[in-house]
Amino acid sequence: AAWFELELPEKLDIVKMDQFEIGVDKYSNLEPGRNQISVELISKGKNLNFPVTVILHQFSESAKALRPIKRGDVLLPELFQWEWTDLADPMQKTDFHGRNSLNGVSCARDIQAGAYLRRNDLKATPVIFAGDMVELQIHRGALFASVNATARREGCIGQTIPVRNELTKQLMNVRVVGPGVVKWRN
Image (cartoon, rainbow, N blue to C red):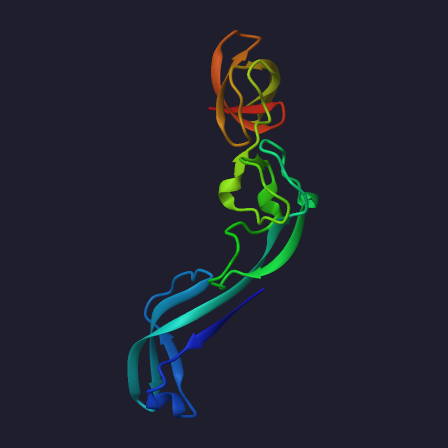
């Protein structure tokens, strides 16, 4: 859920009129918080262009550690107390928001109980390690094949890593798609 405030300059006589339309020069996405945009007020043939401040209020959950968390621990939602936060609030305690942002990450440093989780506290969690036997999926048109391969280095979901195809003994660069699963696309 989001809502916004429009702060108009008080000295505008047109604001006191009953009927007016608001126009915008350029359309763009607003960020949560204070945004400066240029608007046009139109009333009874009188047009005024001026800058206004739009405050976009958007809410998301912030994570507060329930207990100490050690560096390297996989971060799970149940490790935190979740608090609704207005992203427009300039006094925010954290820059990390949303439970879904914890998918595939672990702790980059020790976190004390009661501390808010920040983005720089996160690191991607490897799901494949060097030497692991992985399933190499190969797609070519309507053809799908799956063979065993050996990972040559660790990788997180979405990363590209080298593997050795155990059938052909060739090295291939593939994308990690899940724990123990990599995909090659031509």
